Length: 188
Length: 287
Image (cartoon, chains in turn red, orange):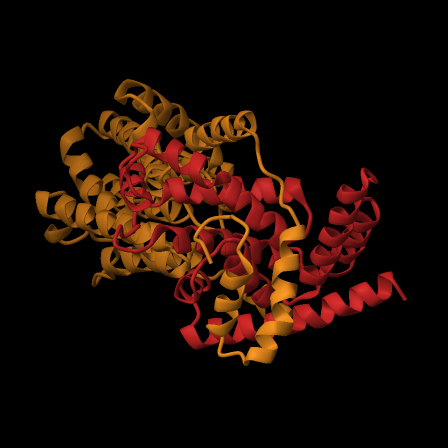
């Protein structure tokens, strides 16, 4: 099964083939977990729960069209789950999430000099991305962390191609401003 | 940009930015920003963690698998029997008690010769059954319906098992009353049964359908009224009750009609989302 495409594996998984499902999980668990971890903001247990829910949805699908690209479709499931979570916890998240992100940044454990520097930079990036709107954050994560094309991002987020492009463009500029603000805040 | 989670080269990042119709200056300014994103590392699950994740996923899939996919036929039948035999407890006690009391009253009318035996049985047995069936299923009469809907068991199966149980009870009561009156009045048991069995089936099926569409109170009231108006005719004499017309005697046609109506009701059942008064009030308050 290792030589089969994602789409072929998904078609088999839809017919109840658990080996094909396991193969897809092995291929994509780390990717989905990483995407959701960054999308929900530094919360690994939540990212793991949402990842499980995403693969559960994937396994229960019976209407997947194997002509459709698998990766954008999988990211679409993950994004929709994260959106549902944001909606459900909207009132709780706005304040508590920011506080948690701030705590996470503050809790970065000191280590060797390079590690500390990387952690500091990573925390700054995480904080900046966390301040982007969800729609910009998802587009940037998909493009620059997971290498999806603009067309694939449009499919995954269910938006027109022009909107995907504009979200990336605006999101990248905002990210630059946020990172500059963060670095100035850290080193006044 | 490569299609996997790998570090992109500055050239790849610049190319990705140029795709967004950015000027050379902007590309130059934003390339370090995009490169700096790589500093934020996401957790990478180990092989063991991935296997544990897969095992948990398998467990969840087994929990949520449909009955037909995960159980053998024998196990499935046994499980459905277990579920079905608990359904009578979910029907309100007043339905059971009410129909018993009403049947005793109808029998007393005939027993003490306040009316003819055929009238008492033909009039009351179908009307009682139809009234009770109206309160079989629905948000107004079943407080646990929301929980029931959340289970993987078919709503058709649940409603069907309740219908069979309740109609079985009503038929048993009717047969007992008929046997007692036939013995008391030296009349034909079979002849008396034909007066009510067919109409009971048809009226009950109509009542079930109406309760699903318009609510139990409307279904019970309308079926009771319709049967009385159809059944009771005021003769030339003072208040003499006559039997229903011959078309209402038990016949294969009545059973076929009842079956069609029940099937229609069950077909409507899974999509049945008739708003209750309470839900309308709640939604208006939320607005």
